[in-house]
Length: 268
Length: 64
Image (spheres, helix red, strand yellow):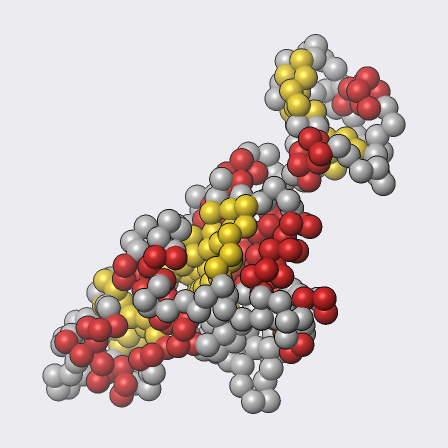
Protein backbone atom coordinates (compact mmCIF):
# COMPACT_ATOMS: atom_id res chain seq x y z
CA UNK A 1 0.00 0.00 0.00
CA UNK A 2 1.02 3.64 -0.41
CA UNK A 3 1.65 6.02 2.46
CA UNK A 4 2.25 9.71 1.81
CA UNK A 5 5.09 10.59 4.18
CA UNK A 6 6.22 14.24 4.40
CA UNK A 7 4.96 14.80 0.88
CA UNK A 8 6.57 11.71 -0.71
CA UNK A 9 4.84 8.44 -1.55
CA UNK A 10 6.33 5.43 0.22
CA UNK A 11 5.40 1.81 -0.55
CA UNK A 12 4.84 -0.08 2.68
CA UNK A 13 3.49 -3.49 3.60
CA UNK A 14 -0.11 -3.87 4.84
CA UNK A 15 -0.64 -3.96 8.60
CA UNK A 16 2.13 -1.60 9.71
CA UNK A 17 1.17 0.61 12.64
CA UNK A 18 1.76 4.34 12.95
CA UNK A 19 4.37 3.90 15.68
CA UNK A 20 6.18 1.13 13.77
CA UNK A 21 6.20 3.44 10.76
CA UNK A 22 7.67 6.23 12.89
CA UNK A 23 10.38 3.97 14.33
CA UNK A 24 11.29 2.88 10.81
CA UNK A 25 11.40 6.25 9.05
CA UNK A 26 11.85 9.00 11.64
CA UNK A 27 12.37 7.64 15.15
CA UNK A 28 13.56 11.03 16.44
CA UNK A 29 10.35 12.87 15.40
CA UNK A 30 8.40 14.45 18.24
CA UNK A 31 5.26 15.50 16.34
CA UNK A 32 3.12 13.07 14.32
CA UNK A 33 0.23 14.30 12.15
CA UNK A 34 -2.01 11.68 10.59
CA UNK A 35 -4.50 12.86 7.95
CA UNK A 36 -4.54 16.42 9.25
CA UNK A 37 -4.78 15.54 12.94
CA UNK A 38 -1.92 15.61 15.46
CA UNK A 39 -1.85 12.35 17.41
CA UNK A 40 0.22 10.09 19.69
CA UNK A 41 -2.19 7.17 19.48
CA UNK A 42 -1.04 4.11 17.64
CA UNK A 43 -3.22 2.64 14.91
CA UNK A 44 -2.88 0.47 11.83
CA UNK A 45 -2.13 2.56 8.74
CA UNK A 46 -4.36 2.35 5.70
CA UNK A 47 -3.62 2.76 2.01
CA UNK A 48 -3.15 6.46 1.03
CA UNK A 49 -2.86 7.66 4.63
CA UNK A 50 -1.02 10.97 4.91
CA UNK A 51 1.66 10.97 7.61
CA UNK A 52 3.71 14.00 8.56
CA UNK A 53 6.45 13.85 11.17
CA UNK A 54 8.70 16.58 12.37
CA UNK A 55 11.32 17.36 14.97
CA UNK A 56 10.53 20.63 16.74
CA UNK A 57 13.08 23.38 16.30
CA UNK A 58 14.70 21.79 13.27
CA UNK A 59 14.32 23.70 10.00
CA UNK A 60 13.22 21.13 7.42
CA UNK A 61 14.64 21.02 3.92
CA UNK A 62 12.75 23.10 1.39
CA UNK A 63 11.19 20.12 -0.38
CA UNK A 64 9.42 18.91 2.78
CA UNK A 65 8.55 22.36 4.13
CA UNK A 66 5.40 22.74 2.05
CA UNK A 67 4.06 19.34 3.03
CA UNK A 68 4.79 20.06 6.71
CA UNK A 69 2.98 23.41 6.45
CA UNK A 70 -0.04 21.78 4.88
CA UNK A 71 -0.15 18.81 7.24
CA UNK A 72 -2.85 20.28 9.50
CA UNK A 73 -5.26 20.91 6.63
CA UNK A 74 -8.15 18.52 6.28
CA UNK A 75 -7.27 15.96 3.61
CA UNK A 76 -8.59 16.75 0.10
CA UNK A 77 -9.25 20.34 1.12
CA UNK A 78 -5.76 21.54 0.41
CA UNK A 79 -5.79 20.34 -3.20
CA UNK A 80 -8.88 22.46 -3.97
CA UNK A 81 -7.70 25.45 -1.98
CA UNK A 82 -4.33 25.49 -3.71
CA UNK A 83 -6.02 25.80 -7.12
CA UNK A 84 -8.23 28.71 -6.03
CA UNK A 85 -7.87 32.34 -7.08
CA UNK A 86 -9.33 35.09 -4.92
CA UNK A 87 -9.26 38.87 -5.44
CA UNK A 88 -9.30 41.10 -2.36
CA UNK A 89 -10.47 44.65 -3.03
CA UNK A 90 -9.27 46.98 -0.27
CA UNK A 91 -6.46 46.03 2.11
CA UNK A 92 -7.56 47.75 5.31
CA UNK A 93 -8.84 46.15 8.50
CA UNK A 94 -10.85 43.55 6.64
CA UNK A 95 -8.78 42.96 3.52
CA UNK A 96 -5.34 42.70 5.15
CA UNK A 97 -6.59 40.20 7.73
CA UNK A 98 -8.55 38.22 5.14
CA UNK A 99 -5.46 38.02 2.92
CA UNK A 100 -3.37 36.67 5.81
CA UNK A 101 -6.04 34.08 6.70
CA UNK A 102 -6.38 32.91 3.11
CA UNK A 103 -2.59 32.68 2.83
CA UNK A 104 -2.45 30.53 5.97
CA UNK A 105 -5.24 28.40 4.50
CA UNK A 106 -3.11 27.84 1.41
CA UNK A 107 -5.23 29.62 -1.22
CA UNK A 108 -2.94 29.29 -4.25
CA UNK A 109 -3.33 32.67 -5.89
CA UNK A 110 -4.29 36.03 -4.43
CA UNK A 111 -4.89 39.33 -6.21
CA UNK A 112 -4.41 42.18 -3.73
CA UNK A 113 -5.80 45.59 -4.67
CA UNK A 114 -5.42 48.89 -2.83
CA UNK A 115 -4.26 52.41 -3.72
CA UNK A 116 -3.13 53.52 -0.27
CA UNK A 117 -0.04 53.44 1.94
CA UNK A 118 0.27 52.14 5.50
CA UNK A 119 -0.06 54.89 8.11
CA UNK A 120 -0.04 54.88 11.92
CA UNK A 121 -3.85 54.97 12.35
CA UNK A 122 -4.08 51.64 10.50
CA UNK A 123 -2.20 49.68 13.14
CA UNK A 124 -5.13 49.45 15.58
CA UNK A 125 -6.79 46.80 13.42
CA UNK A 126 -4.95 46.14 10.17
CA UNK A 127 -2.32 43.49 9.57
CA UNK A 128 0.70 45.78 9.29
CA UNK A 129 3.71 46.64 11.48
CA UNK A 130 5.68 49.78 12.30
CA UNK A 131 8.26 48.74 9.71
CA UNK A 132 5.58 48.99 6.99
CA UNK A 133 4.69 52.65 7.64
CA UNK A 134 4.78 54.58 4.38
CA UNK A 135 4.84 51.47 2.20
CA UNK A 136 2.11 50.62 -0.27
CA UNK A 137 -0.36 48.32 1.47
CA UNK A 138 -0.09 45.93 -1.47
CA UNK A 139 3.69 45.62 -1.05
CA UNK A 140 3.58 45.41 2.75
CA UNK A 141 1.03 42.61 2.61
CA UNK A 142 2.89 40.73 -0.09
CA UNK A 143 5.99 40.83 2.13
CA UNK A 144 4.06 39.31 5.03
CA UNK A 145 2.51 36.58 2.92
CA UNK A 146 5.93 35.57 1.61
CA UNK A 147 6.97 35.00 5.23
CA UNK A 148 3.79 33.11 6.11
CA UNK A 149 3.46 30.90 3.04
CA UNK A 150 6.00 31.32 0.25
CA UNK A 151 4.11 28.88 -1.99
CA UNK A 152 1.34 31.36 -2.72
CA UNK A 153 1.29 33.41 -5.89
CA UNK A 154 0.57 37.02 -4.95
CA UNK A 155 -0.35 39.59 -7.60
CA UNK A 156 -0.66 43.23 -6.55
CA UNK A 157 -2.45 46.18 -8.15
CA UNK A 158 -1.75 49.56 -6.70
CA UNK A 159 -4.88 51.30 -7.98
CA UNK A 160 -8.12 52.84 -6.85
CA UNK A 161 -10.81 50.52 -8.20
CA UNK A 162 -13.67 52.26 -9.96
CA UNK A 163 -16.36 51.48 -12.50
CA UNK A 164 -13.94 52.14 -15.37
CA UNK A 165 -11.17 49.71 -14.39
CA UNK A 166 -12.89 47.07 -12.25
CA UNK A 167 -14.02 44.93 -15.20
CA UNK A 168 -10.53 44.67 -16.63
CA UNK A 169 -8.77 44.08 -13.29
CA UNK A 170 -11.17 41.40 -12.03
CA UNK A 171 -11.95 39.77 -15.38
CA UNK A 172 -10.49 36.31 -14.59
CA UNK A 173 -11.70 36.17 -11.04
CA UNK A 174 -14.64 34.03 -9.89
CA UNK A 175 -14.32 34.90 -6.21
CA UNK A 176 -14.08 38.55 -5.23
CA UNK A 177 -13.88 39.89 -1.69
CA UNK A 178 -15.15 43.44 -1.12
CA UNK A 179 -13.22 44.91 1.79
CA UNK A 180 -13.58 48.66 1.35
CA UNK A 181 -14.29 51.18 4.06
CA UNK A 182 -16.55 53.59 2.17
CA UNK A 183 -20.15 52.38 1.71
CA UNK A 184 -20.53 54.09 -1.68
CA UNK A 185 -17.49 52.17 -3.00
CA UNK A 186 -18.84 48.97 -1.45
CA UNK A 187 -22.15 49.36 -3.28
CA UNK A 188 -20.41 50.35 -6.53
CA UNK A 189 -18.24 47.23 -6.79
CA UNK A 190 -21.04 44.93 -5.60
CA UNK A 191 -23.41 46.38 -8.22
CA UNK A 192 -20.78 46.13 -10.95
CA UNK A 193 -20.16 42.46 -10.24
CA UNK A 194 -23.76 41.32 -9.80
CA UNK A 195 -24.78 43.21 -12.95
CA UNK A 196 -21.86 42.29 -15.24
CA UNK A 197 -20.10 39.16 -13.95
CA UNK A 198 -22.71 36.38 -13.67
CA UNK A 199 -20.10 33.70 -12.86
CA UNK A 200 -18.46 35.62 -10.03
CA UNK A 201 -19.34 35.40 -6.34
CA UNK A 202 -18.74 38.52 -4.26
CA UNK A 203 -18.29 38.37 -0.50
CA UNK A 204 -18.97 41.84 0.89
CA UNK A 205 -19.18 43.43 4.32
CA UNK A 206 -21.44 45.84 6.14
CA UNK A 207 -21.34 46.82 9.82
CA UNK A 208 -18.49 45.87 12.16
CA UNK A 209 -17.52 49.07 14.01
CA UNK A 210 -17.33 49.59 17.77
CA UNK A 211 -17.60 46.98 20.50
CA UNK A 212 -21.18 45.78 20.18
CA UNK A 213 -21.79 42.07 20.71
CA UNK A 214 -19.71 39.70 18.60
CA UNK A 215 -22.79 37.57 18.13
CA UNK A 216 -24.69 39.96 15.88
CA UNK A 217 -22.06 39.67 13.13
CA UNK A 218 -23.18 37.05 10.65
CA UNK A 219 -22.89 35.87 7.06
CA UNK A 220 -25.97 36.17 4.85
CA UNK A 221 -26.53 35.10 1.29
CA UNK A 222 -28.29 37.78 -0.72
CA UNK A 223 -29.34 37.34 -4.31
CA UNK A 224 -27.60 34.68 -6.40
CA UNK A 225 -23.97 35.71 -6.14
CA UNK A 226 -23.76 38.08 -3.20
CA UNK A 227 -22.82 37.31 0.39
CA UNK A 228 -22.80 40.03 3.04
CA UNK A 229 -20.94 39.66 6.35
CA UNK A 230 -21.36 41.99 9.31
CA UNK A 231 -24.08 43.23 11.64
CA UNK A 232 -25.59 45.43 8.91
CA UNK A 233 -26.01 48.35 11.30
CA UNK A 234 -22.97 49.57 13.21
CA UNK A 235 -21.12 51.86 10.85
CA UNK A 236 -17.88 53.65 11.61
CA UNK A 237 -18.67 57.25 12.60
CA UNK A 238 -17.66 59.94 15.05
CA UNK A 239 -17.71 58.34 18.49
CA UNK A 240 -17.69 54.79 17.12
CA UNK A 241 -14.34 53.72 15.76
CA UNK A 242 -13.24 50.55 14.06
CA UNK A 243 -11.54 48.15 16.47
CA UNK A 244 -9.52 45.01 15.95
CA UNK A 245 -11.84 42.43 17.56
CA UNK A 246 -15.03 43.05 15.57
CA UNK A 247 -13.19 43.90 12.38
CA UNK A 248 -11.37 40.57 12.69
CA UNK A 249 -14.59 38.70 13.44
CA UNK A 250 -16.11 40.11 10.25
CA UNK A 251 -12.89 39.33 8.33
CA UNK A 252 -13.12 35.75 9.66
CA UNK A 253 -16.71 35.49 8.41
CA UNK A 254 -15.65 36.65 4.96
CA UNK A 255 -12.59 34.38 4.83
CA UNK A 256 -14.60 31.33 5.92
CA UNK A 257 -17.33 32.04 3.36
CA UNK A 258 -14.63 32.30 0.69
CA UNK A 259 -13.20 28.96 1.84
CA UNK A 260 -16.67 27.38 1.73
CA UNK A 261 -17.28 28.66 -1.80
CA UNK A 262 -13.88 27.29 -2.88
CA UNK A 263 -14.97 23.91 -1.51
CA UNK A 264 -18.30 24.09 -3.38
CA UNK A 265 -20.50 24.96 -0.40
CA UNK A 266 -22.72 27.93 -1.21
CA UNK A 267 -24.83 28.22 1.92
CA UNK A 268 -23.55 30.67 4.55
CA UNK B 1 -45.51 44.74 -2.36
CA UNK B 2 -43.05 42.69 -0.37
CA UNK B 3 -40.01 44.75 0.60
CA UNK B 4 -37.31 42.84 2.49
CA UNK B 5 -39.99 40.47 3.72
CA UNK B 6 -42.46 43.17 4.86
CA UNK B 7 -45.72 44.11 3.20
CA UNK B 8 -45.95 47.68 1.91
CA UNK B 9 -48.85 48.98 -0.12
CA UNK B 10 -48.32 51.60 -2.80
CA UNK B 11 -51.29 53.76 -3.65
CA UNK B 12 -50.05 55.72 -6.66
CA UNK B 13 -47.78 54.82 -9.51
CA UNK B 14 -44.17 55.23 -8.52
CA UNK B 15 -40.79 54.30 -9.93
CA UNK B 16 -38.17 52.33 -8.03
CA UNK B 17 -35.91 55.34 -7.47
CA UNK B 18 -38.71 57.44 -5.94
CA UNK B 19 -39.87 54.55 -3.81
CA UNK B 20 -36.42 53.77 -2.42
CA UNK B 21 -35.68 57.42 -1.70
CA UNK B 22 -39.03 57.82 0.06
CA UNK B 23 -38.28 54.72 2.16
CA UNK B 24 -35.10 56.44 3.33
CA UNK B 25 -32.54 54.53 1.26
CA UNK B 26 -29.50 56.30 -0.11
CA UNK B 27 -29.38 54.81 -3.59
CA UNK B 28 -25.60 55.20 -3.73
CA UNK B 29 -25.20 52.66 -0.89
CA UNK B 30 -27.51 49.83 -1.94
CA UNK B 31 -28.02 46.93 -4.34
CA UNK B 32 -31.55 45.94 -5.37
CA UNK B 33 -33.27 42.85 -6.66
CA UNK B 34 -36.79 43.08 -8.09
CA UNK B 35 -38.75 39.82 -8.43
CA UNK B 36 -35.52 37.84 -8.35
CA UNK B 37 -33.61 39.93 -10.90
CA UNK B 38 -30.81 42.38 -10.22
CA UNK B 39 -31.83 45.93 -11.11
CA UNK B 40 -28.94 47.84 -12.69
CA UNK B 41 -28.37 51.10 -10.85
CA UNK B 42 -28.87 53.09 -14.06
CA UNK B 43 -32.36 51.63 -14.35
CA UNK B 44 -33.89 52.62 -11.01
CA UNK B 45 -35.80 55.56 -12.52
CA UNK B 46 -37.13 53.49 -15.43
CA UNK B 47 -38.70 50.73 -13.36
CA UNK B 48 -42.37 51.28 -12.49
CA UNK B 49 -43.49 49.34 -9.42
CA UNK B 50 -46.60 47.17 -9.21
CA UNK B 51 -48.39 46.03 -6.08
CA UNK B 52 -47.40 42.37 -6.48
CA UNK B 53 -43.67 43.15 -6.78
CA UNK B 54 -41.09 41.67 -4.43
CA UNK B 55 -38.11 43.87 -3.66
CA UNK B 56 -34.93 42.94 -1.82
CA UNK B 57 -32.65 45.81 -0.85
CA UNK B 58 -29.12 45.27 0.48
CA UNK B 59 -27.68 48.35 2.20
CA UNK B 60 -24.06 49.02 3.01
CA UNK B 61 -22.79 50.95 6.01
CA UNK B 62 -19.24 52.26 6.32
CA UNK B 63 -16.29 50.56 7.95
CA UNK B 64 -13.63 48.08 7.02
